[in-house]
Amino acid sequence: MTNPSPWRATVLTLFPEMFPGPLGVSLAGRALASGVWEIEARDIRASATDRHRSVDDTPAGGGPGMVLRADVLAAAIDAVGISPDRPKLLMSPRGRPLTQARVAELAQGPGPLIVCGRFEGIDQRVIDARGLEEVSIGDYVLSGGEIAAMALIDACVRLLPGVMGKEASGTEESFSDGLLEYPQYTRPQLFEGVPIPEILTSGDHAKVAAWRRAQSEALTAARRPDLWARIPPKAPNRPGRQKTAKNKTDG
Image (cartoon, rainbow, N blue to C red; front, side, top):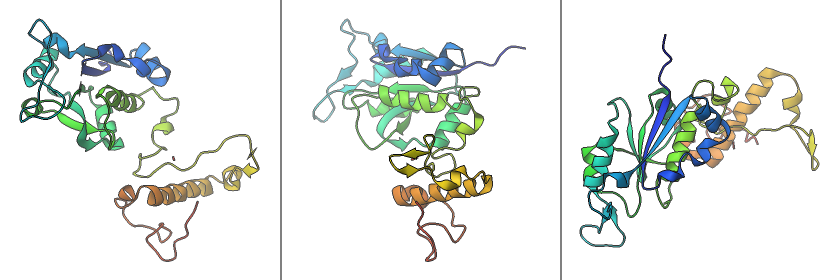
């Protein structure tokens, strides 16, 4: 019986030397070295046709900066020859926000093709013609899509089977159930006069679980009302929804 193909990230970039970069160390790096996943960084300039290897031009309609050409990028995408079941992503600040749910979907698949933009952006025609899914990692602008691509890849790789030390690590953390993670503590028992919450050392697993859930709910309600609004109302102790609610003190 042959082993299944490893999860694979194919990155189209003007700076392939940036990869694997941070992805080559720690959990992702060990998994990369052991063959759990693979990364291929391809230079977009390899698809340029002129002697200067030009990949950009001035924006139609005027304006500052340069725009990545549709013909060059389309040729670079086509040269990869990826299978239809692999998502084609474009890291873009105008894309849909990357969520843990989308990360889990990507981690369960064969791995994406990721286009890293530069300059003022890329020609809209190649986005439409090649069906690129625009993905954002936050409401800010980076110099290019490479760092955003690394963040997306790292988020996916840590969910691959065998990458994290404990299976529970992937389920008891921020966003895994739509909530921010509860606060964490470890030794020493007393730090600058502040002790570990007594309930965490009580040995009562049911009470610990309830405390952690309450903490996650309170943190989410306070810090991320956008996430909190998506959680269906339930018990009367839900923060901010019932007059009898008790506010309890990322995760």
